[in-house]
Image 1 (tube, rainbow, N blue to C red):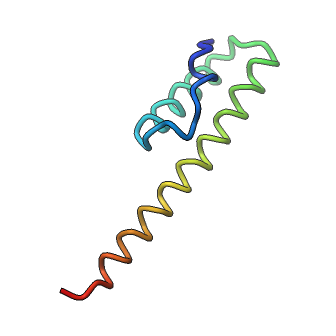
Image 2: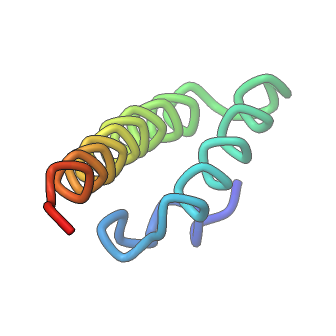
Amino acid sequence: MSNELLETMIESLSFEEAMQQLEQIVTLLESGEQTLQETLSLYQRGQALVQYCLQLLDQAELAVRNLSNEKP
């Protein structure tokens, strides 16, 4: 398991980077090669990444709505 994957601050990631990390986590979890503790750590990281991505999507949706409501 990559320590870098778990140590990178989530808030410093772009949406695309966060999604890439989620894909890596899913691959690692599906392999079944981690210890129980590693699996729990990966799962927690994945949950945090999902929440972060949802937050970024909400912000993007709000920005689009604000742009749509602007008068030319």
